[in-house]
Image (cartoon, rainbow, N blue to C red):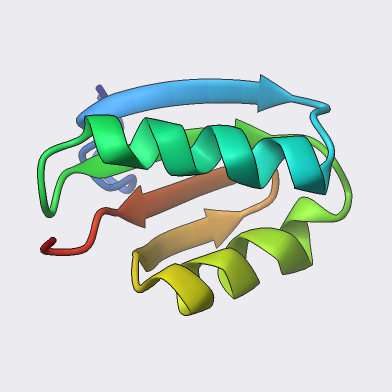
Length: 80
């Protein structure tokens, strides 16, 4: 859970470390499935490719990228 007022409220947090794109998006898909619709995941992804990969993945899957400030991302799960 986020305690800083300028950050979105997160329902779950996952530190993916330096995990690369292929493995990251597979794991991210599973993490998002565990969340209730509209719940927010706080993701920490240090891989340099995450800057482009996370927004692209959100666009392809329909999840909402609420905030991105590498290496921190807040993703809202889609409705269904």
